Length: 287
Image (cartoon, rainbow, N blue to C red; front, side, top):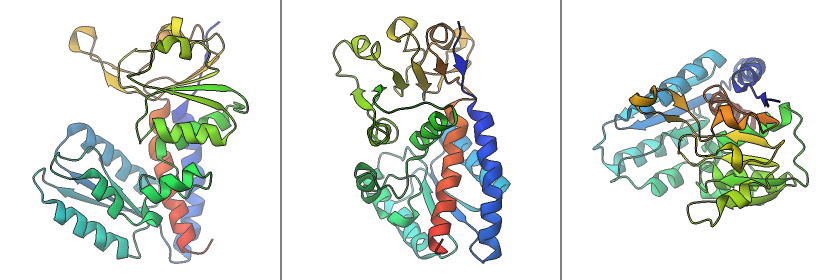
C-alpha cells in the first residue's frame, strides 16, 4: 500500500489565503508588512529563490524591496545597507539570500540584522530563543515542516525522530522543534556510523542531506512519516529532472506519509517567510 503524499503546495495556498486578511488589517492601521531581500552575486538558483519570494510578497499584499549587489561588492556596503534597513520603520523583515560570496563573512552579515527583523531566524539571539523553547522567529523550512505535521494530524509526542543533516538552516532547528514537540531526536550526518541502523527505527524521518535519492526503501521503517527537504537536479543522462533526497517511488511503498519533490516542503518555505514577516509587523503594531 502506497503512502499518502503530503501536498505542500495545497497547504501553502491555504495558509497564504489566510494571510491576506492579516495583512489588510495591518495596512488599515498604517502597518503594512514590509520585507527587504538582499541578493549578492549572480547565482542562478538564488535569483530564482529571490524572484519567487518577491512575487509571493506581492500576492499577499506585503511590501517588498529587492536589493541586488554584484558578487565583488565590499562587505561594508552590505553591512551599511542592513544598518539602514534596521532603522527603516517600513521594513519589518530583512532576509539575506544565502550563499554569499566567499569574501563576505556570512556570520557577520546575519548577526548585523536586528533580531526583531530576522525573519529567517538565523541570528544567534533567535537561535537561542528557539533552543529555550520560546522562539521569536522559526527558520522557514523547519517551520513549514511543523505546519505539515500539524495539518496531517501527526502526533510527535514520544516518537523516534531521525534527521539526516545538521545544517543551521534545516537540521539543527528541525531537531530543536521536534524536541520541543516531545519527540526523541537523533541527528545524523556525514560522520554517523551505520546510518541505516538509525533511520530504520525512525517513526519520523527528515532528510536534508543534498544528495539525490539518498534515502532508499530499505532505510525506512514501515509506516514511517518521511519528510524530504532536499531538492536536487538529476544529470542530463538521467532526465535532468528535480528530485529530493529520498527515492520517492520506492519509499512511498514503505512509508505512511511522504512529501514529494517538487510540491512538498518547497512551497512551505516561502509561505513561512511570509508568516514570519507578518508576525514581525504585528509585533511592531502591538498586536
